[in-house]
Image 1: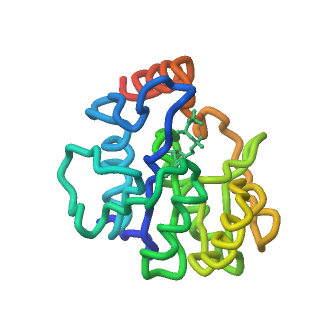
Image 2: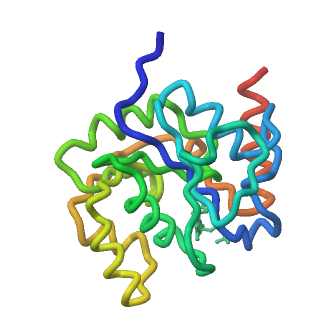
Length: 197
Ligand SMILES: Nc1nc2c(ncn2[C@@H]2O[C@H](COP(=O)(O)OP(=O)(O)OP(=O)(O)O)[C@@H](O)[C@H]2O)c(=O)[nH]1
């Protein structure tokens, strides 16, 4: 039997998808109706609690929305706005954050990030780039996030730089592919269909 991780997981799904041209969280992926459902189904056996962070309820699959759907207030789009709501809402000292558009990140890598997160405020993945929104965040960063927002600073990189952040190195760039546009979406679809064969 799989032993679930001890902290909750949050999938960020509330972006504008400007570069994709349509809401990427609802695009079909592999054997799932949507990227959101794909991430959710992959992570579900490994976490006791999985929250979806969004602006609106746009999800048509079955989960306890009263408890696990976290809706941002207001209509400004930025992941930092999402983090503010998440840190306010979830009663756990740490959360594992992942974006809906990084479907190829493996459970082994998530396990490594969670295990290595001790003694840090933030512990994120890094290949040649830093994956600012794939890692463990301490919810007591709430005050700092609020202060940043009050100064209209929305950069997650700023939050990382100004706190005790660990950067965990990974080698496989493809695993951390971010589906920002149609080419990246098609590339990830092709990687997943090869790995399913
Ligand atoms: N809940 C929530 N999630 C957000 C918000 N803005 C972005 N996200 C999520 O944060 C992650 C990174 O988002 P971005 O790269 O800034 O935006 P995007 O929607 O992915 O794409 P672009 O619009 O093309 O920049 C994605 O998983 C988004 O779904 C927001 O205001 N609220």
